[in-house]
Image 1: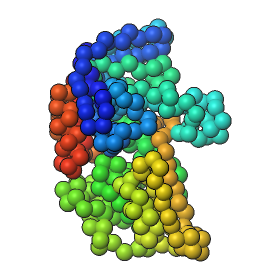
Image 2 (image 1 turned 30 degrees about the vertical axis):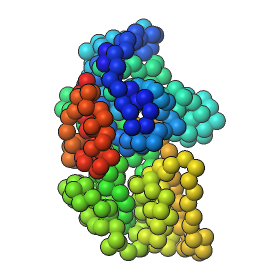
Image 3 (image 1 turned 45 degrees about the vertical axis):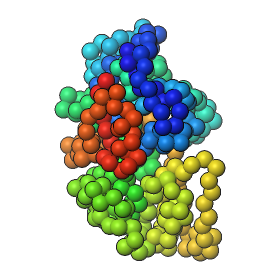
Length: 328
């Protein structure tokens, strides 16, 4: 089968690799849609500690079951959607309800959705692989993984319908936060950034678009989605007294951020920085995806073939498009 391999930062190659045979409990899917994401863009640009090089690339997917191992909970021909990881449910963090911090969740994840076939390990197939409803397209179904990250973040919040929310960064995650918060009944959602085309998408999803330079403080909730240290530091300035700042965007390893300690303490600002997701967040995201009121189609910027890998990520690097769909 053909697979897109990240050889080193800035270098992708299309290779012919062997189609894996599923072992007991495993599920082999024929990939129908594999969407690009910000994490993959980071890996393409500078490498990523959780994405080995050289290695098969991509982790968002949907597809059709092509083969199963003994005892797998699916049948050949099933249309499925899923995520690329699952917690062990027995370690220290899993036992304390923090599945997203499971000690093995990263080491047992599966990568390689930018390929004709993807083998889903047994523990992921059991916990986080689902039948795809017929009314849901493969393209939208492949957004389950990033939407699960959004759901994990929202799990940590005590939202009120009258909250004033500021989302900084109109990338795909920021836009998913817009869609999720609007679905949950939050009326006042402001999306701030510089890319006017992406801000227009946010407006279609129900946000009030704004240039960040035009924003002043006093928001109940600020959600930072850029992964830029300077923006992390500035995010606190937009929070009201007693407000919450969610530092969602991941900054490069080794970087540090500084905050006004007087502001944090005397204004009682809560800082939250969610990582990955647990099984409850995945199920929440699945419910959102199949809800007809959530339309994430504006996030899909086009369809690409695997041999367009480098040009696709160069487009994303230049801010052209949001999420592209590889159809192997």
